[in-house]
Amino acid sequence: MNRAEKAALQLQAVAVLRMLKRPRTYEELAETTGLPAGDLNRYVNGHVLPGPDRAREIVNGVGRDALADELQSRITRDAEGYVDNSAIVFDQSFLDLVAPVAAESFGFETPDVVLTAATDGITLGAAMASFFDARLAYAKKSKETAVEEFIESRQRLASGIELTYYLPASAIGGGETVLIVDDLIRSGETQELLLDIALQADADVTGVFALIAVGEEGLDRAREITDAPVGALEQME
Ligand SMILES: O=P(O)(O)OC[C@H]1O[C@H](OP(=O)(O)OP(=O)(O)O)[C@H](O)[C@@H]1O
Image 1 (cartoon, rainbow, N blue to C red):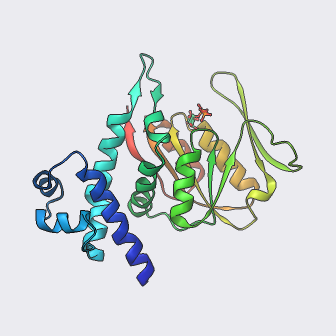
Image 2: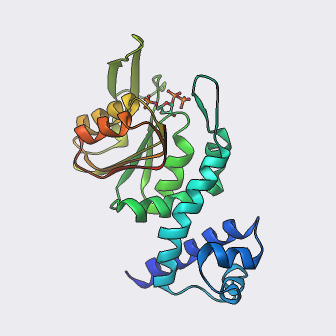
């Protein structure tokens, strides 16, 4: 890790601690993290940065658990089990915290491009792209006017409806590395279409990440298509 990467990790740890501190006293934060309250006070107030090893533990350990709990508490489901995650996907600063935790937890390599599906994947995609200093590309269910060439992928869904995603052909270059992300993975149909788009672009997929996986079906479907790491921050039944 070079000096800039170390500094970035230390600042991410501070951002995670600040999020955890909001509803807690320092005593409670000490209990949650297992770190001394005095140290935590200095980190949260920006007087001292946690060392790189401690920073990694915060981001990987308590950071991941805390984000997953926070995610869980903001999601609501209707009687049919459909998920409303607008309290997550509308909150860009929360997603900015998720990006380093996801990258550390699943070992995703830095990609050239983060690819997602419009609409709800866009804010997560932007957070991940900004974290990796990568480009963002999102496939849409309609064609952008004035774009001449598209990569398109079509599938007949289990429901019988046909779903097509379009990506401007210039968004991903042949041989580039692509990380596929989305807010939610349920059947895995959307991820399959995104994986197909990456394949058509001759790109190399470095991972598939979702904030929430409902059941295992979608993750398994993605794992059948790629050997790259596939994971979700939170899994629900
Ligand atoms: O694993 P799957 O069964 O494919 O479901 C996951 C997809 O469903 C949602 O998008 P939706 O199609 O509702 O479009 P939206 O983002 O525009 O709401 C979500 O944002 C994922 O892209």
